Amino acid sequence: VTTKYLKTGKEEKMDFMVMENLFFGRTISRTYDLKGSTRSRYNADNSEVLLDENFLEVLRTNPIFLRSEDKHCLERAVWNDTSFLT
Image (cartoon, rainbow, N blue to C red; front, side, top):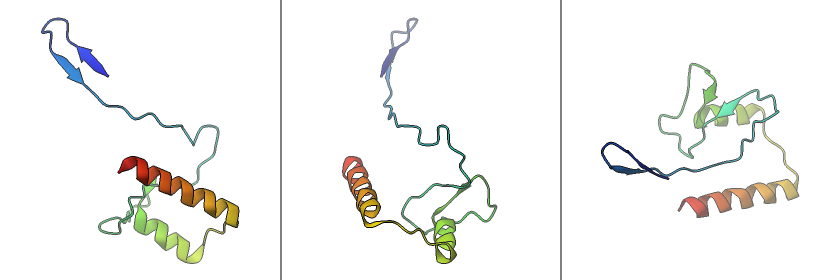
């Protein structure tokens, strides 16, 4: 998106990424901000948003079980997202 200031004539370009709101109409018990790294990625405060190491900590006692079809869909989504971002 490019905006133009009327007084100065200066133009400013901004890039936006629009994503679907996956939380709409759902009750979310925990939110994780996952980056794929464990370096300084632990939130000891247990605030609203948890990090990678918090997620791994929970998985040790509460693993996520997926059907093979669901696992395949998740792997494809991760592949598509990383391909897009590279």
